[in-house]
Image (cartoon, rainbow, N blue to C red; front, side, top):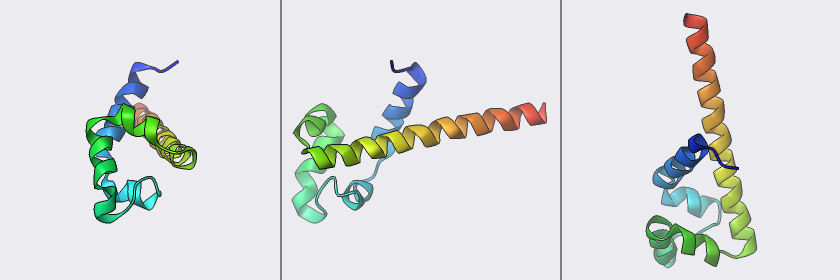
Length: 86
């Protein structure tokens, strides 16, 4: 089950992920040949994900999971720092 915080973190992932990160991960083609995929990622993410072949979908899933884990770790570190200050 997804939490409200995870949903917000996923929205941050969508809005903060750059084209070069997707290219580097092999999810979209670099240069002009990746223009359609990049536009779809930004404007129609559900169709983007549905149309990805298996290995690219796995790479995208790995990117999202990594982003969510870092976000959760950052929140835990901020909470721990706040406790230490108090």
